[in-house]
Amino acid sequence: MDANAELVRPVEVRARGHYRIWIRFADNVAGDVDLSDLGGHGVFAAWDDPAVFASVRIGPARAICWGDNIDLCADALYLRLTGTSPEDYLPGLRRTTSGTRQDPAPLVSRIG
View 1 (cartoon, rainbow, N blue to C red):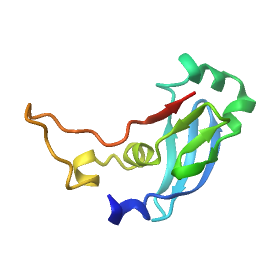
View 2 (view 1 turned 180 degrees about the vertical axis):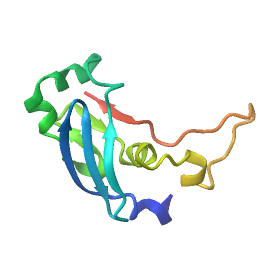
View 3 (view 1 turned 45 degrees about the vertical axis):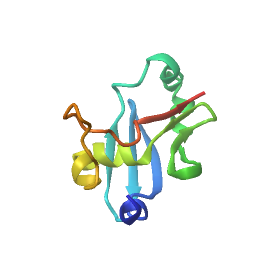
């Protein structure tokens, strides 16, 4: 991942509404990411308040954050945006003995 780390650094993010964000990465990949599968559930119910959802920002360690309690992994958002598989994104991703892949960082990296 070290070779890709700079490329997937988020450089700009904006709320679009309806649980969608627009994000641009350092490699100029940009577009909308639909987060409606998360919205309204658990901690993500906070996004039902348009002001909370609009507060999206790039936080420490490249995370996409809302306040101090919600952040999403930039790598996972990059995969969603590009449709890239974890194996293509991280060629060294190894398979476990059961034949299943060992996933990189989850989309939800911290829920406070």
